[in-house]
Length: 310
Ligand code: NDP
Image (cartoon, rainbow, N blue to C red):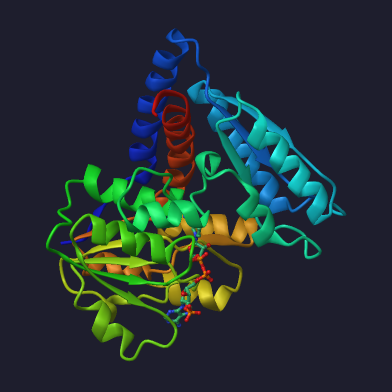
């Protein structure tokens, strides 16, 4: 039986509706949570992401503003901007869109964001809160992974979870969230021996690698839940053939789009995994939509923690 497809678009829509209801309730108390997005220079991919984030803010009723320093911005100039946003009471969340230009000390800029406004959850203070299970801001994409599992009724407690990838923004926080949800967690990376064998232990397999279709069906225990965080642009016809020569029913549509646009978005999980997995997130339409939904959620959470508690 083919895998159950976990619909990230629908789950993200549900979360955004819940956030919009909270924003409405907060408006009754005279509070409108606000997000400031800092976009340095003209990276086309970053511009698309930021546009999506600002549009989502409007849809759920959040206040948002964009700051667009030039490509030549210095570390000192960005620190001044961040400090100004830290001081402003109507700003609850600050998001510095990565990557920053090479002359900028990115770590210093990210460290300057007030942890209470760090809606990306990257600040070491929030990393510490997550690992010690204190209230704080959790990175959006890994938080989205957990939402998909929970809202799809997939049990986590007591399950064997394997996370492939150990980045600070996806793999490590995803592993930490799974530990906090009582899974038994293994984290894999490029030096892991017998990766397919380790992955086959998983009841829940999370792929956050950045390699199109690397997780093939021999990595997956029959019936396992597979969460595909990867977002890879495939442009080579041979690579397209490797992934889509035989597999899901939507291949014809994919092929049409690939030929029309010259590329297609593919996860880290090979489409044929759908033949062995019990449940699977698609790409696109799986984890991706959750990332922006959780950013909206985090902005409201930051507003509540900062304005209404303690
Ligand atoms: P990074 O490049 O920071 O990390 C990749 C991880 O994968 C590293 O830990 C690396 O190991 C590991 N890895 C690489 N090659 C192999 C291999 N052959 N075998 C085993 N492990 C390997 O990537 P990110 O964590 O930032 O992103 C991962 C993917 O998720 C990307 O495709 C990215 O586009 C996507 N993404 C999607 C988001 C969304 O909204 N859906 C948001 C963020 C990311 P090592 O540490 O040893 O180098």
